[in-house]
Length: 121
Image (cartoon, rainbow, N blue to C red; front, side, top):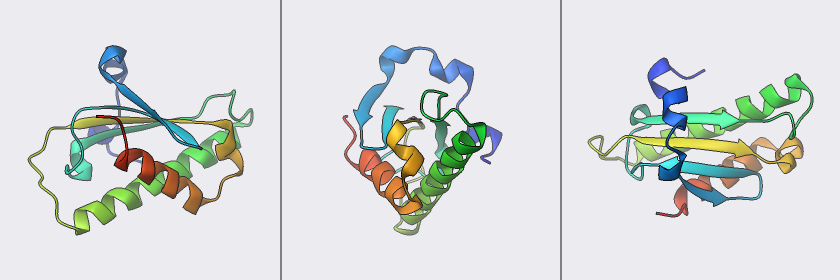
């Protein structure tokens, strides 16, 4: 679980016009702000898995846990490379696609990493 300061609030969802959308094979990314070189603690994160993707709450929570774990690893790798902690705070929201129900952790991590790396600016 993320700390309260790292979670996206309902107020962060408002103003959807400011978000940019990118699509991967397992997730769609909606992002706002500059988080290219920001520390993980400066970024607000959310993963949304709808009932359309997985009817079972157990499966929805499994996808969400895997996705949040992958994000944690991605941002830990970035922080080890040395980043500037003074960058603007960003908001990152991942929406799971139905293909994510059968994906392995490494596939989820790769897809999320690619979305963060190649997102539209």
